[in-house]
Length: 112
Length: 115
Image 1 (spheres, rainbow over the protein chains, first blue to last red):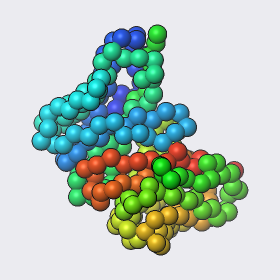
Image 2 (tube, each protein chain N blue to C red):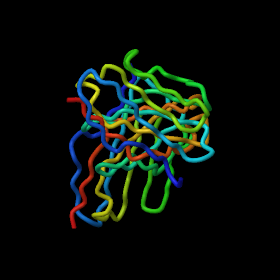
Image 3 (cartoon, chains in turn blue, brown):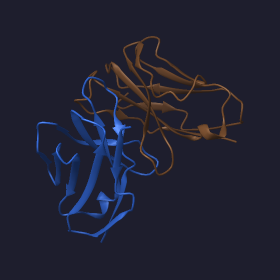
């Protein structure tokens, strides 16, 4: 069955450092991969989308890579700030439907 | 409204009761999704509407769960004979595209507690 794995343990880093979050998947060939941010008590908020034929995507301090051979995506936040503290979710889709399959999320804590 | 609106924000019900959860999507969005999220987990897909019809209901756990979107806008998720295991946050999302090459906008969720 399809499986998506994100770091289950919280990631704690110092302000100003680069945070790197991992999303691995098996038994799936996604056409798109999305990253969302979720704060406690709130719904997920879209951050970035990357297509299967794209290796890398950037938006301000965010960078996403997508390696369909390794079946892995890396999500980077450079110059991290305490306000970046949240849970980050990766989501995959096949492209012919709106259905997203989410990982369990990784909680990031940026300390001042 | 400016975003996806879900009501109520919180719902406490007794085991065996019937509940309805409402979702008001972003105006003009044809795609609407329901997800369920348990503590410490990512959202789990339930059902997807394109317009008025359910295009994919493969995530509904059993026949106690049903959803409608009669006019292609507001949607209602209905749960019959609620069980304690139904306790979770139910999230609604909408999108302007019928395929997942664009972002989904989520509501704040309805926290359902079955006691």
